[in-house]
Amino acid sequence: MNKRWLSILVLFIFIVPLAIFSLYHSGDEIEEATYELSSLKLSEFDEIFIDFPSKAATSFKKINGFWYQTKPYQTRADQNIVYRLLSILAARSKEKLDSLQIEKYGLDKPKLKMTFAKENEKKVFAFGTYNPITEQQYVLFDNNVFIIDGIFSEMASYLPVELIDKRPLAPFEKVMKFDFSRLEQWQENYLRIEIDDSGNFTADGKKIDYKSEQLAEWFADNWLKALATRVEPYKFDARIGYKSFDLYLDDKAKITFYRIQESPELLLYRKDEGLLYSFPQDRGFSMLNPNVTRQD
Image 1: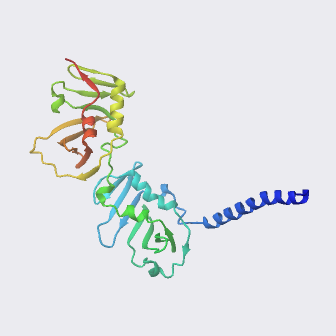
Image 2: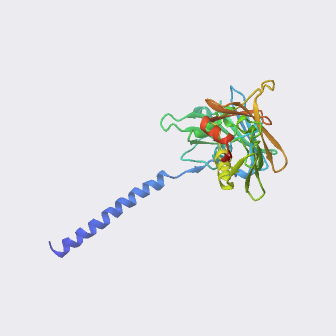
């Protein structure tokens, strides 16, 4: 092979892959062109209203940086779900369509409306039908029709009870003391767990040995990280002698939990919220039994 043909071969080896790479990525750039649904910011709103044509509405309000469900229940909201709903404000669409024929997209009679509000300002997203090819959903906002993933309307359509916070304690509730002394397993020892301002743990009671580090681990794993498998409103019958225990907070408030059931799952009723929290049996056992040792 002479030098001329060798040079051509080398050029071919290097140029062809570069050309393919360029074409491939050029196509990607065209395919990834998107439109903003809105330029709204999360911080601009402190209320969310979700309205359906055939069932009760759900609403949320942010108070001191924390989201609460205000309808149909008045309780702490699942923060993750609320912020996922809010993420529609930053959503993008691959298409921006003509809004003069909204009936074409099922937007003349929306499946639901999601309204973000603060004081007198309201911004409404209306959700229509699904595109039969892409399975994405048509959304009307600010006189523009977009097409986005259906996850937003799916989350908004959760049952209100599914939107309640699954944590037995709110992040802002700082526990300073547990009093387990009324539970059968701790009546003889009169067990109480205390936490000082520096986060050091002590166990107070009769014939009890403990290690502060183990109590700190117990608290973090079984209370701070605890998530109920379900939470629901509950009609508590005070005539039944359910065993209970108390938690005391840094603001001197007291939270009382009633142990409704231990098996096959632990059911704890939080009196001040009127809610029943369900936990797997093994998790429930750990929640009510700190890492302490009874002395003989």
